Image (cartoon, rainbow, N blue to C red):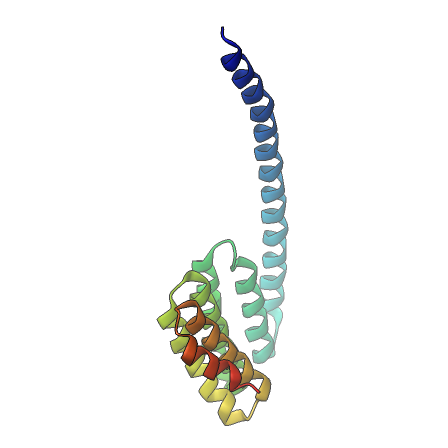
Length: 164
């Protein structure tokens, strides 16, 4: 065996063990995180069943959706839409705008920028009706960030500066 093959094999053995250890460790961490998230979701859903307040139900559904945001985006969308339906039924414009903004955020994270802007604009319209400066600011910043990501810097700066 030549010297090059010998050292290549030695390095391979050394790093393959480290790689296997890393995979096992991250797998255990992922399983632990999944179990913790499942417990949180179960707990929130249990509270949801007994909650009388409609706005509390909206908030709980948004929390459940946000737990899944980085894991199962489709499940997040499901819970965000349930929250939006509940917000519409309660006639709570603030919660309606909040749900629309969260849905926009999810679409932004997925790279569906046109859909994200559509939801941010719906949210913005409601926040403007409510004269909610923080909500308005969040919508303009989110829209501006999407436009920046798309290379539309001139429009993005206008939306981001609208906050000031």
